[in-house]
Image (cartoon, rainbow, N blue to C red; front, side, top):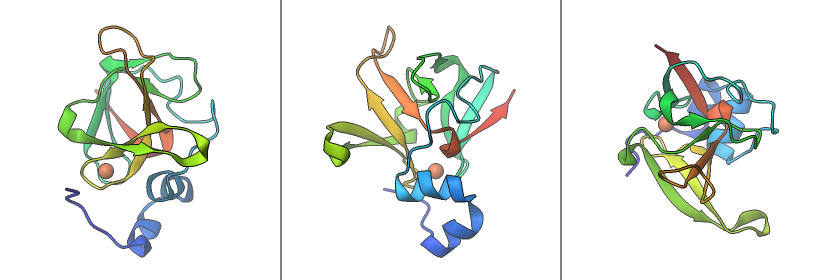
Length: 130
Ligand code: FE
């Protein structure tokens, strides 16, 4: 399903160490540390790995959780979801559909109308401001 395939060496050369850790090693940045945690400028959040459009700023809200939170993706085709049972938790992982990069997780405690909270690492995103 992923359209973009690169070797780990290529990803490592293109991404910053933090981007690589999140996107390719399923890492999580420290809460309240990310570049976009408290950004509410209008624009489009693209994948830091491949540039695919992932989230619109309209869907971003202040969840207080320490990471950028969105109530919905830009479109359903932009992301993929997978069940994640690591760290003794049952969570749903969110990945970029284009490059397979790890973005974060989605939780069922978001605002109306979707009821979803896409909890996404800043390091996986790049804001293209309007
Ligand atoms: Fe991507």
